[in-house]
Length: 186
Image 1: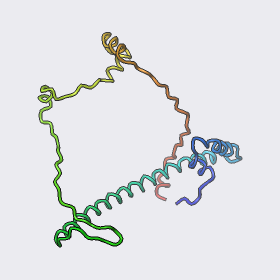
Image 2: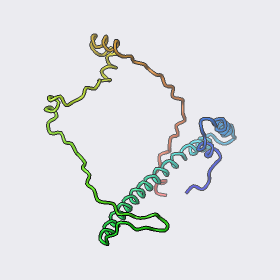
Image 3: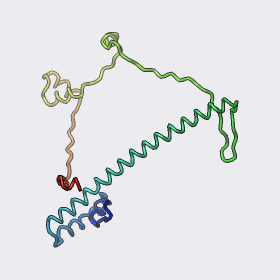
Image 4: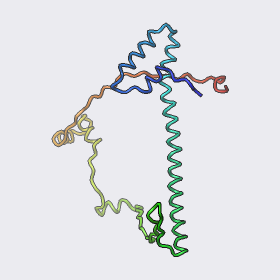
């Protein structure tokens, strides 16, 4: 278990888009230090990879919390229905409390939920039970000159195609060292 949180690791984990100057200064100080280049690479790389470990830990905790939430909702539903059975058994419709206003027995109700299964799609389409949707992929292909000439004219007359150029900033990529058999066993 890791017990030390290094300064650069903290800088990497807490950086925001408006606080990059501090991170830049920290990166400069690491690169300008007298340490061996492999130690510099490890320090920077492990600091960035520590984010992955925290995200993985949070993902696991979220799964556990979601499971706990599901179990608690189920327990509440069971407690409410079981309580309703016992209230009905004793003929109690309302029980007033000091800390809470009251517990009341609700009347049972019936709810209809419909499930549609299509047995013959073609027959329903022939009967007119369908909607028309534009084929946007075909429209883009016509713009690119991959359709027929008449399609291209029609498409250009009734639509426009705009292209947005998105610049993706360069990023560091931290490559993990593959674990050797000796490291895996220890």
